[in-house]
Length: 192
Length: 437
Image (cartoon, rainbow over all chains, first blue to last red):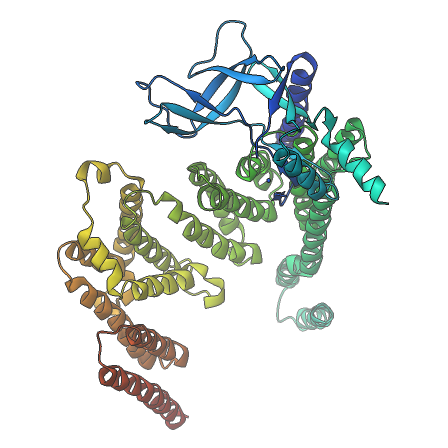
């Protein structure tokens, strides 16, 4: 009987852990969306598919390169902190990169080193927020709208990102201020 | 049909026992014992079909939920989607909790409930990742999913959880280190695999003949064979030794007292070990590998710290330890040629660093394995073993067919002699059998 009780307690702990993981994911994201600061990240010139999580748009960002001091060693996949600022049009810009977590009040986001070239002292950055999940029927259309807007220089495509304590959550992907979901919806309606 | 037969069998058995008791041949006590023995023996086989269908059903429903959630419904609000993500998870947890409390001895409940929960956990994490566009590629998603499902095999005493876990961590390692670009290391795989071994041992202790055990006997070596290659970095050539030692180790496990008497189909270690050893040797019977090896400039400082060398040392020691333990008591004549290949190969490899002689040695090794297998088949009067030996030699000849430096006549003669070999040996053995009858 005691054995059974113990087993049940461990099971309940495991069950709570299984619930905690998705709940923590929600909490962290909501916290950033609620209290984080909004940044517009311009996207640069992709319908990928994840077998378990469905379709998404793969996002690449324009501002993903920064110069660094040459004496430091930047290895691939190393965690780095990007300190952010905004340009005159209100889009996010890299202010600087750092290997340690910034202690002051500046906004920063955790990212990874994609690669580092010694010749021009450039560090290429892999932002973690590179997937925007879409409904299955809308993802291919959204992908098209997205790449068309990237080819059209008069249009600006950007991702709306909330940032808090280095964590980032994508709120939306917009093209000239209109949400890509809305654009695809109205396009699909017009066609009908 | 089998169930019905069993029923009649037990009915007639209890009748017979009654008769034996009445005629004072056995005591009532013995009669009870016999009855009890058959009752307990019958137990698990009775609901085997239930278990299979229960698990299949749960896996299908679980995967179905996965796919439905992956559609990523835009029409639902974030709140509704979040609730939907938790419904299957909590349902699975309630099912498993109920099983633990009320149906602990029921395999069908345990296995199918756990299978469902396993997928429900994944579906829930997946939907939340979609709703919040949570970063992370497929491999990190798989790792999180496997970690939170790891305790299920132990808690629920569920073999399906263990099998799904092994499959999941293999998928994770393959995704992270072979398929994604840039690749990342997946050393976590080895820790996670070690964590499942106690369950495997418990399963063996409890029921070494169970079907779940047999599936484990295949899945575990298969998983290791697939993932060992992820260790390859700068000293890739060393991985060939690591693989040969791994195949040798598996072959020795398959030949150990635990597995030796098992049917070949139930002995994944032995099958994978022998096929692996021979295929790899055949691949290395060409000169491309050895030509490259001689030109390779190994840096001692780099090699000594490389993951490849660590793999070589661990696997070779494991294989050697097992070989020593098994061979201690047996005469040398009984030696199975494949068991020794990993040692011979290490020597061949070292020679190969300096001399092209190794190509000849590898060909000789394959030829000797083939020949000794044929002789063993003849001795045991086993057509399967005999022809396996012939197939090994045929494969070697076919490989040599592609080498352009052998003349057509030499290759022709080789083919004709192996062909005649097939006829003569099979004919001779069948004739010998007839004579014995």
